[in-house]
Amino acid sequence: MAEIIRKATRDSYGEALVELGKEYEDLLVLVADLADATKVEWFKKAYPERFFDCGIAEANMMAVAAGLASTGKKVFASSFAMFAAGRAYEIIRNSIGYPHLPVKIGATHAGISVGEDGASHQCCEDIALMRTIPGMTVINPADDIEAKAAVKASMTLDGPVYLRFGRLAVPVINDNPDYKFEIGKGILLKDGTDLTIVATGLMVNEAIEAAKILEADGINARVINIHTIKPLDTEIICKAATDTKLIITAEEHSVIGGLGSAVADTVTGCCPCKVVKIGVQDVFGHSGPALKLLKEFGLSAENIAEQAKQAFQNK
Amino acid sequence: MDDKLKKDLQKTAAHIRLGIIEGVYAAQAGHPGGSLSIADTLAYLYSAVMHVDPKNPKMPERDRLVLSKGHCAPALYAALAERGFLPKEELKTLRQIGSRLQGHPDMKRIPGVDMSTGSLGQGISAACGMALAGKLDSASYKVYTILGDGELEEGQVWEAAMFASHNKLDNLVAIIDNNGLQIDGKITDICSPMPIDEKFEAFGWRVFKMDGHDFESIERTFADIEKVQYQPVAIIQTSIKGKGVSYMENNAGWHGKAPNTEQYNQAISELTELLKGLVD
Image (cartoon, rainbow over all chains, first blue to last red; front, side, top):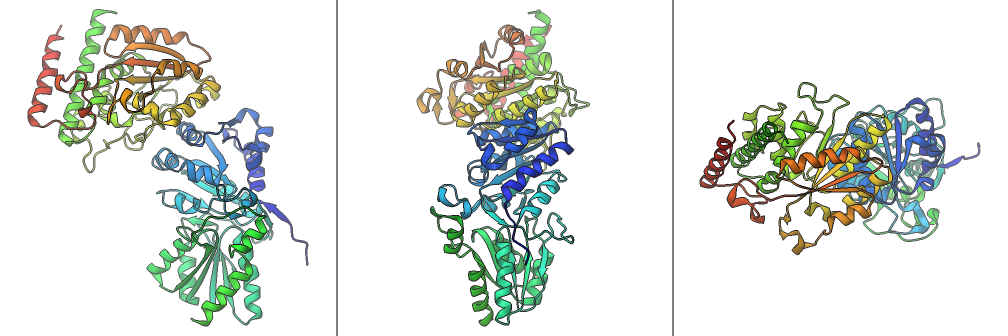
């Protein structure tokens, strides 16, 4: 078996920006005093004249980005998910979302896997917040390949995009010639008939592993990668609901308002079936090593498999 | 100042004030007080300062105006109507279903509105972004943004103030409408942002003061700011909330209230009288 390559999607973000900077001469990158942590430092090194550190002032940064975008500039604004989607929510809503300005928000350090920094920095609400803004595209890539593809694809949209990245190095799972990224299109990773695991972000890899565990128990699980939470690929979700009549969602985010909620909203309308939501269960996180935290909060292949098995047996 | 120009400006300002009253009365909602206090400044900006073209409202080299105190949209709409961006009749559709004239400015709907605003403290940041873009492009345009004095209580204003001076945005002009009143009362009673001049100076801005209802003072100030380099400019204008409508003047109660029919008639008659006095 090939060795597993691991990489944090924040690194992919930083690398993709450097590549894009070459392609788009008017691309600007803003950050709020987190150049190194969000990896936009690499863009700064490559294109110092197109990089602006706004200091620890996320609210101002987001509206500055809006002003720049209003003149036709291509802009990425970066911070941690907590301060981008959280602190600057209302600025994103009113100064970027309402005028539908094409600002791309690169939010790193999302989710519980921030680890040692603890609850104040573990943002598990950002998907929920961002998907309530009309016209906002919300993308939560699963690995390096997908993150880079997402950053590049976001440039083609004439509207705001929220891109969610992680601090933790996660396995590269999409390194295959057939991989194709399309905003708003879910990816069928494994077909199956007994149930469907719909996962996003770093939970996609856990979903693939969970399907293997279930296979050993004689349960044939379908696995779908939803990198774009909004607009959601309702077709792939409704087909899964119709075909397998049981959906397990898996996300490194609160079970309130994230992927699980979006999927439940969708199947309610097209083909109601049981939806089991795996995610952070309406609690704050705490400090600790990322991998241990993911296990503790049930964000693991083992927990997905266990919950799926239980739900399948009660189907 | 040339007498003819002064009279023309006074007429334009009176028409803007009439437009404000027509809009707010028709809507039976809106913010007349702070709209009336910036009518003269808007008249001056759109008549004598800003390079804009109603036939080409999106031209890249245009000067920009961000109404950071977005609730004073009735004044902006009336000024845009005076400048030919909107039919004057449309002012009466303010805040109605189907109208382009939203309660707060919407750049997607109205030609001549450079930024959607309404949530206080954000417009000045967006203006910083526009000014930065101008610098990057070596463009000649300026960005004007109008803030309320109460709005200075928003922390984001000071984030923007730091950003503007750090980036030497000398193509940015923030006009602070210092009418002394906010919704809940006097700014000095609520959570005082005074002294405004020293604060902006401390943040690295060049500060100017003018009488927001005296065109000679306004003209002098706009001439003076031309000399400033490498620093953003703050103009603190002393003004009277509700200026031009006697019973609204200096009364916080008229921050966000529409006149009834009797009050409307009185306002129209006062402003019409004023216009009559300006006949050549």
